[in-house]
Image (cartoon, rainbow, N blue to C red; front, side, top):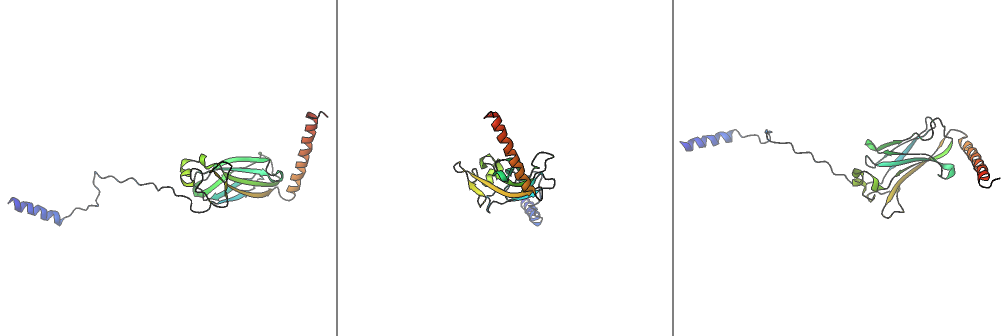
Length: 197
């Protein structure tokens, strides 16, 4: 009799198998694994766009550098060989590889003349950890024509430049005249203070 009852239970169990996919109250969903960061497989790109709506430049751009990469953006006077900074700003690469810095120059000023926008990546070692995981501790995963070695061994810098003119027609002539006037003032001040003339 016991054998018959046991046989009947086995028969019922095989006739109605349990769905092994059905969730049970004790099962937990496995945590989703985060995708590991990957190295850049293409040359570094930095495309710049200069917005001059109010004659104070805003530098916008796109890049394939990872989100969170810190960029240094500067605007310099092209006629002085880059010795005179109009302004410098730090920004980060946002979602979709975009970045924005500025406006540059004093509020109310209207830039007149030829300038250069310069975007660089500070030494890779100072980048956030998630960025270094992709570009390398010393930037060793960065490649392409925008990547240059530095004086520091095993360190690289990424740099892109774009020239632009602000102030419309005659702006460069006005810039040159202003610089001649500034040079005369400097000489006069030097003569007064140093040469006592």
